[in-house]
Image (cartoon, rainbow, N blue to C red; front, side, top):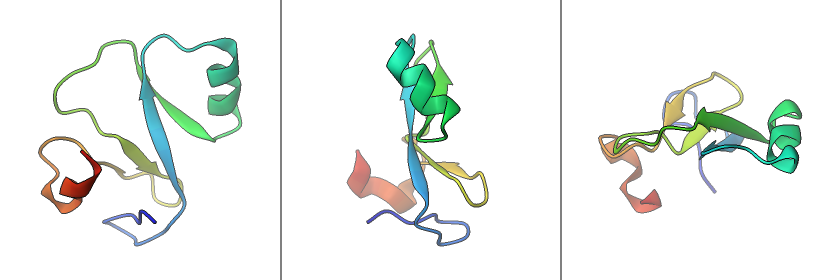
Length: 68
């Protein structure tokens, strides 16, 4: 199970990139995923902590090498 590198919470959601479908937009409105935008870069975060808001899991975040 993933935990936040800042607060150690396990309330982690995925950050999803690209144009969202209606279903994905509904998931974002219900705080089940975070929309990351339509432009994808090489260092975009993969996860967001629902407790403290920390985004993590990008290519320069070496505390989560196992998620790549």
